[in-house]
Length: 103
Image (cartoon, rainbow, N blue to C red; front, side, top):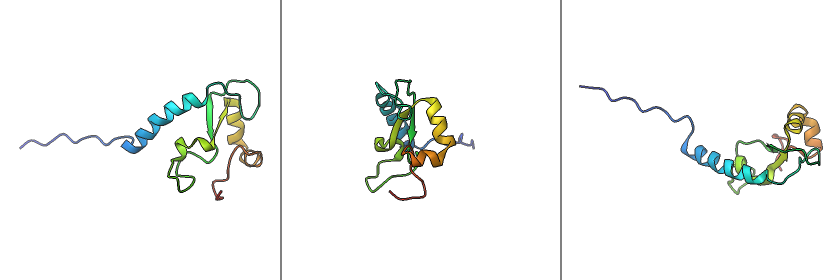
């Protein structure tokens, strides 16, 4: 009797993999011809800040936050660092939502 070789566990579920592929396409289009949302000048916004985070859902529409463009802003790396290092400032200026509060 020979034992079957165990099938490796997927690193990412099929559902998440589908969302990540969709995100890659949407991200590319979203960043085209934009200015940094923080600096309001034509520095290169190469990143997306997810104002409500990337995990979960914002409301009953069942759109994962990862691909919910209502909560995306285009930012340059410098601005993204500032947003993540100063969460209170980011919330006060509308660049982030508190993850504890319901909108």
